Length: 206
Image (cartoon, rainbow, N blue to C red; front, side, top):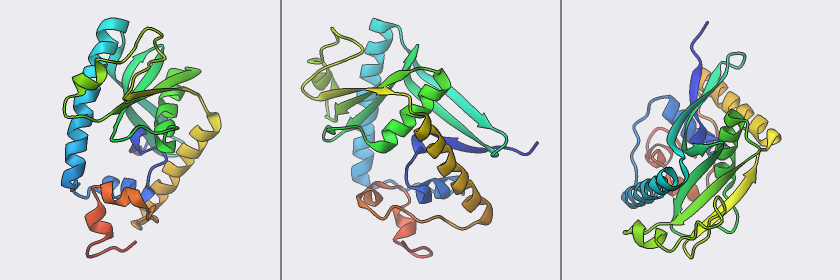
């Protein structure tokens, strides 16, 4: 049996061109301002993760795999926190009014794997000192969590979204096999992308 092409849950419903470049092994070059945000996000994630582990008994960084030999692909992921249902933690410079579509798609992959009816998206406002942000968070109604710089969303499993996610991965796989990059999103997210230098440099154009 041929090897399955490996996708990541965090790539669900994101820019297909970005996923293509990752599959082809192009070097990531993160803009400096994104590096700072990533570092702050990791710090907030680690502190909140320890709270979920110590106070509520959640397993952190739960590795999962969903395989589709028929389509020739598999989806890997690491659930930020898991115990009966998944929790995904996202650090943002500003808290969204509603969850981002690609965050919903990522969590939905985890819900599929866990066979859970619902999960949670936690948004934490990025800060140089994440402990200051998280110290005021109210866990009294966990898993519904509240705080000034914190937003929690309860998210049900969506079968239609999962099928759309798998379909997008399969279409990217076809581009990968042909060696032809798919169309990119061409929007504000491009400036946050580690492959910005390819799309806006020599060799490729949007």
